[in-house]
Each structure stands twice: as structure tokens, then as C-alpha cells.
Image (cartoon, rainbow, N blue to C red; front, top):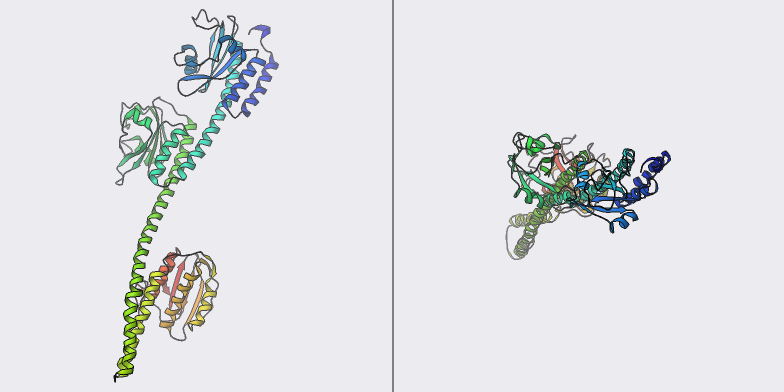
Amino acid sequence: MEGDDWPDADAVGTLYRATRDMMRATEPEAVASVVVESAEAILSLPVTGVHLDDGEGTLRPAAVTSEVVERFGEEPTYTDADGLVWDAYRDGDPVLVSDTAERGLETPMGSGIVTPVGDHGVLITSADEPDAFDERSLELVKLLAANAEAALDRIERERRLEGLHAASREVMVAPSERAVLDVSTDAARSVLGFEVNGVHVLSEDGEELVPVSTTNTVRDLIGDPPTLSADPDESLAGRALARGEPLAFADVRESPAVHDPETPLRSELLFPLGDRGVLVVASTEPDAFDDADLTLGSIFAANVEAALERARREETLRERESQLERQNERLDEFASVVSHDLRSPLAVATGRLELAREECDCDAEHLDAVEEAHGRMADLVEDLLELARKGRTVGETERLDVAALVHDRAVEHDVAVDAADPAPVDADPDRLVDLLVNLLENAARHGGSDVAVAVGPLPEGGFYVADDGPGIPPEDREAAFDRGYTTDEDGAGSGLGLAIVRRIAEAHGWSVAVTESEAGGARFEFRT
């Protein structure tokens, strides 16, 4: 409105205060309502409406004054065929129409202003009579539209951030690497609004980037996505992967490294996924992406990379668990053979030996040798069963004092404990006792009746058990934990005790090594 009819400076101040209400709004419709209320009450523009883009080629009414419905009979919508409104929206420039009849427009209104509200929609205000608006009117309407744009931008940013969190949660719970990739393309489309996107994964030979997951929109535009070169000089995706940082192209046709110079895809964002591949986001329009797209895409790609690493670790763990399960099944079968097929004939042989002592006039020396052999066989059977059944798995762990456990068991094995320092660890109590008992028996067997054992913590975490016996020669230390290894010249040992020690340590996730103790004996170091 012109002259005295137009609001004064106080109204402009009221308009700024109305902007606060826009910035507090959480929905686009609420922003639109504040806009039309402000236009009607503050700027005296009773025929005003805000129409927002629905993403499908239509500007739909988000809020209109009651006068709009009275003049038009409904809340009007505008499609791409409505030239004036869409020209203003597409060009981003407001249009002042002083006389609709002179412009040949089919409308009950005499004049009006169509003002773009960023890329969200348009603000339309009109009057019954021609020439109702001047340049000052246009400036105030533009101010109102700018405030609405800022409020709608804030809502969109918040929604996209919420979408980013939701998309990241989706990829983080995907059960496999392939599932992560499939979920990531779908989430980038549905949550972040990247309709044209896909993931290319680096081939095993490192020469190519192979498409593994794309949106249907990609296939509609270009068919089956091509395999790209991983050479940074031959493809844009290869360049992003080699640099390890996101790349943005306003128009890929202008790059000599583009795969297809005639591609319908014009602008692209390329996000490397660590050393696994590249997330490609594209548009058929040049310069379609802004800094916000690049930032959100970079954060999302980093989350996808982390999800791929998690899925890879979990898949490796599942495979390892499957291998352990198969190994345990074989060990169970082996333990069954040892338990039944060896113990039974050994029991028969032992019984026959007793009968021979009672009924035969034999040299006792020969029978004693047979009995000793039977004893060694029985010990070997027990050690084999212990190797097969113990140390494969670990039950519930608790904080344990290794030194205290060694003190308790050393008495039973007639081994002195010398200068034992506390060495607490988290371990399965039963399995840890099995490990220590095997070390004490090893020390007693090789160190004699006066052997002493020391226990203490390792500086880097873990504990050691050392003795003052003869020790293990340096050239034999690597093989000391192998099944069948023994230094007994008479072959009295089964060679399984240290193998059991290593099995139990590995079941806890520890490493074990043997070196020389300060007293010249064996020192077993367990890094936890």
C-alpha cells in the first residue's frame, strides 16, 4: 500500500519482533502462519499466502489469510505450468505486478507481489486494485520473506541433523559390511535427501572401484552404474579415494577425469570411506550442492566408514568363533576317543598285570617296568583330556591375586614361593588355577625338591611366574609350548603341560612367552 496507508517505523520494529516467533517455530507450517499473520496485522496485507515446495513440482499452501479463500474460493496451489509464480521461485527474484490485467493474468486480484522464500517456496501478497504496491512495499515484503527463509533454513538444518543421527544409527547396527553399504545408500536418500547416490568398493587388486549399492534413481538415469578406475588420474572417485578427503564438483562434465563426458549427472560430491571405497552423491543439475550438503555428507561418510570397520571386526569375530566351534567339536571327539578307547584297554592291561603278579613266577623287575609304563600312559591320558577340555573357553572372570593362588597351590606341590609380589588380573578362577598348577608341576619336575618360584607383575600389564630350575635353552623356547615338547631325558613327561598353559592363556586373550629368570631358571611372562 502506498503513502499514509503503509505501516510506519513502529510497524517495522513489530515485524522484527514477529521474526522471533518464526525462529522459535519447529514446523514450516508454523513459520508460514507467523508470516501471514504478520503481513495481515502489521503490514496491512490481508490477501497473503505462503506456498511451500512439496518436492514434486507443486507449490502448496502452508498458510493463507481468510481473505485469500474469499477471493479465490479455495487455497490455491501452483504447478510448474504457472509461469509467473514459478519463474519468480526458480529465478530467486521477486516480481512486482502493478496491474494484472495489463499482464494478461487470470486472477481476481488487481496487483500483487510474488517473493521467493529461498528454496522453500514463495510469499504471495495481493490487492484488489491495480498499483497498490510500490518499491517500499516490495522492500518490506522482501524483508518478511527473508526472515521466513532464515527460520525455514534453521528448521531444515535441524531436521537434516536429526536425519544424520538417524541414518548413522541405522548403519551402525547393520550386521555385515554389505548390509552397511545397502543401508547407507538408502539412508543417504531417504534421510539426507541425496536421491542419486551409490557406493563403489575398491577391488581386491586395488585397480577398480566396483559399484555394490545404488539407489533406484541412479539406475533410472544411467542404467547399471559403471565400474570406475581407482587411478586418481582416470576417475573422480579414484581421486577422492587417493586423497582421502571429500571432493565437490559443480559440473563433472568440465573435468577431464570424468568417466562419461556425456553423463546426465552434472554436479557430484565424492566421500572416501577410508580405504574401502567411495560414496558418490550426484545431481542432474549443475552446482546443486552447498556447504551444508558437503558437511553432512562428510559426517555421514565418516560414520559409514566406522560402521564398516565395526562390521568387519564382527564378521572376523564370528568367523573365528565358528572356527573355534568346529575345533572344539573335533577336540570333543578326540577327548571321547582318549577317554573310552584308551582308558578301557589300559584298565584291562592293569588288571592283567595284577593277575600276573599273583599267578606267575616272573621277575618282579619286569613287572615293575610294565606298571611304570602303565602309570605313564594313565598320566598321558589325563593330560590329553586336560588339553582337549580345558582352556578352550573362559567362564565368568573376576579380579584375582596370582601370587595368592600360587602360595595356595605351591604347598600341595611342595614348591617354595620366593618374594612373590601381588599380581592381580581378571581371569576365570578355575582356568587360572589350571594354568598355575601346570607351571608349578613343571617347576617341580625339572627343578627338584628345593625349587623356588617367584611371582610378580609386568610393567606393561600382566604377570610372570619364574623358577630357579635349569631353565629352557634359548633355541628351544619358541617350541616350548608345542604339544609333545619335553626336556626329560627319560621321557617321563607328557610334553603337554606347557601346551595347556598356552591354551588357557590364549583363551583369556593373553600372550605368553618364556625367557630366563634372574636365578637362571624359566620365566613365563603373561601379557594381559
